[in-house]
Each structure stands twice: as structure tokens, then as C-alpha cells.
Length: 267
Image (cartoon, rainbow, N blue to C red; front, side, top):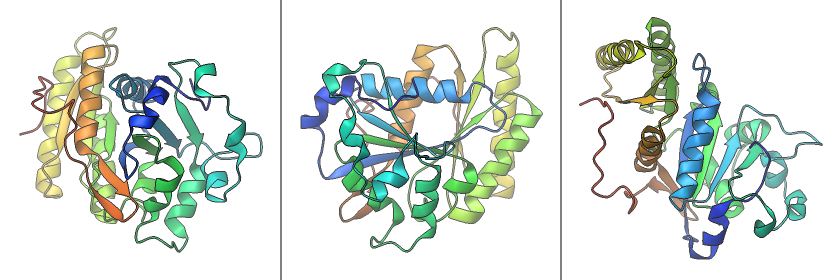
């Protein structure tokens, strides 16, 4: 699944908007052991909804044997050797090692008003760019000034609340961002649902009291396709857009118009 490749959304490339690219940010989890699996499943749901996705994995370092975002930014055409779309498994995701590339965007002077605009010419034939990276990377100049709401994956219980609050505080202090939190429960661990609800309530109260933020939270079950699809739609709603002239907010997608989710959320 982590191989760089094309997917079922490739057939939609000719219909994808050419002037606008949506951006989603997902913090690499600190305590949620199933976090990566949740991310891949959400991305697959987005592709099934008709949004070709490329994941920039800020936890994976580019190398000579595993080129990625840094090489694309340097205009090294290594990706020309990737097989055509009809030669790929339709369920595969395009995933690029991006640790050094994201650091480069955040730290180097740019010719664009915002660092992430450099992604537009590289990935404009995709519908969505998912930046998956540690909170420290997301809270750098990389996302500062955008309207994106990074997703944090939380484990039920006290430790999950503490870790998620620390991440929310880091995003608020260093980038002025308000994160969203999804608490993940697992069917093989009965009794988690009640603990997860209480954990989310505690986190909302703490964020409101100490950060002055009204955060959006969700309760999802790890193996529930319905919950994962609704989380994917929520991420679309929280996405921002990148185009040739600047950064902005994304309008609700047709798939989310009129959508009412039963997932537990803050009010």
C-alpha cells in the first residue's frame, strides 16, 4: 500500500480542476497505534468518492533508493519511469517520502507568497494533497496562515487527552491553527465507547478553557467503513485550497452538500 503508484482516480484526471488543489493535513499519531491504517483507509475512501489523492509522508525520509518530494522540488524527473495508470493496481495510493521536502518548503525562502504554493504545479492533476507529518512540522511556517484544520488521531483515556491537548496547543501557539480530533475505538476492546466519549468531552472543555478554541471532535470505530467515510467527508469540509495565485478555503464538495453526520461532534 505504501508503494508510489496510480489508483482508480487516475481515470478522472482529465475531469479534475486544473486551477485548484485541495490540501488536507493529518498529524502523525503519538499514541494511536492504528493511526496509519486509519489514514490509508480514509485516503482510499476519498479516492472512491472521486478525489485522486497523493500523500506526502513527512515521517519518511527521501533517499537515493526512495526518491520523493525533495527530488520533485529539485526538478529531478525520476517519476517519469512510473508505469501508466492502467498498469497499476486500482486500489493503490500515491505516497511520497517527504520529510526533507517539507522541511525545505518550511525553512527556505520561497518565490511564492506561501510555501505550499510550490506544490501546485507538481500535483495539480490530483484533487487532494494529504500532508502527513508530526505536529512540529505542521505547525512550522508550512501551514501558518492557512485555513486548514489538521486532523489529530486520539486514543481513548487520560493519556490520549493529554497528548491531544499538547498537539492542539502546539498548533495554536506556533501556527494559529485549530485542529480537529478523531478518537478511535476498537471493537476488540469492549467498553471503549464510553471512555472515548468522556475523553472527547474533557478535551473540548480543556481546549475551550485554556486555548479559547471550540474544537471539532469525532468518535469513530476503526473497522467501520461508514465512520471512516464520514471522517473522509469531514476532512474535505476542513480542507483549504492551493492555486496558482494563492491559498484559500475550500467550498463544500458536492459529496458533502446536505450531509448530516451522526458521529459525535462538539457543539
